[in-house]
Image 1 (cartoon, rainbow, N blue to C red):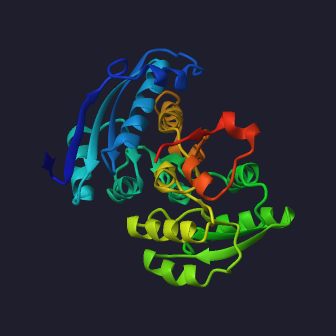
Image 2: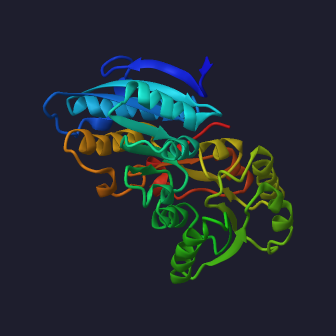
Length: 320
């Protein structure tokens, strides 16, 4: 049901109700503190499994710390800013958890004073320079991305790197520096929009060992992903994807997220704000502390490749 630009995605979520047993392991190491209570409003960009897992991890981690949170979850609609302002004036929660880039932007545009913890943001730069905002981004550090590339595809020497020129240049430059140190050539392939891909792919060098998409989720729609996968299979050039969904579609591997742990990371920031009185601006934005590495066995077979056995215990195969 949509009302005032906000669609109710869930009702009250209280600690201990509906929390999966495996989520308890996410926060088992968190110290239990004195009992506290807080009203928290979750504004999310979508109502889908990753968002629900993040909220569950957030709720479970706060409960483990002894904070009894009354959590209301809503999905942001088309009239988000006005609806957020109206809701905050009526109920005034002690904290906002904004999940997804659209929800975070709408929350900040609302101009309220309620502290905000953001999560599931494609670009951590969205978290910087805003006094009442902190959070956890989705971008993995370049060094981590490079480490897994060298572990799983140690023989590659010529890699085309697809990135968004508007926000991905620092990532590409960091990867370029790491590649030069290892004697590997990275071919820049900036793509600001899906429409750029057909021309870009035609202009790539004939001899490539891999095609690597390092960012640009917002720019690549389903048609663009299919275009990259067709190029990959026609040329027997493995595509390193952006998520598990890319791997299911045919990418050779990707770094994916532990959404429950992303929620637990956000809960640690929320705890410091609610229990310790910390200003959001005093809590540095974070990158994911856990990574899930997933691969497609059928694609490996098609490419006549195999992964080093030493790393197989640390990664997971996904079914197409």
